[in-house]
Amino acid sequence: MRYHKKLLRTKLEQLSWKIVLQMIASELSRALHLKKNGGRKEVENCLLRAKELLGVLESSSKIPAEIGLKLLPIMKEFINYNYIPPKEFKCLYNKCMLLSKS
Image 1 (tube, rainbow, N blue to C red):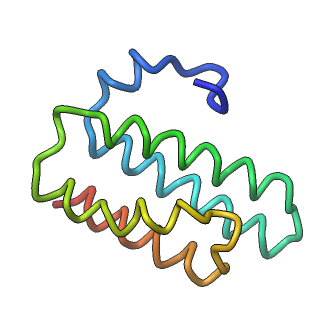
Image 2: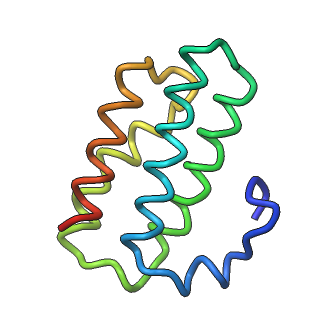
């Protein structure tokens, strides 16, 4: 894990996919608040951590297929994570939270 210094991939893989998805949502929420306050470098770090968590999630065998298909649009948004406008942070956050509750 490059951006999560204290989390090991093996530990993350033991967590429920819902918890990992909520961790992604948390990073997006943090990025949204930091973006409003002008913390560009920290926003970038939050997005990198979210992207890293998404990578763990996409390789998980625990996630149901129908949820995996719903994650594809979220993953596409992260391909160009530097260009995500602030209103999209909230939208992605909402998508992650909805999926984690299904």
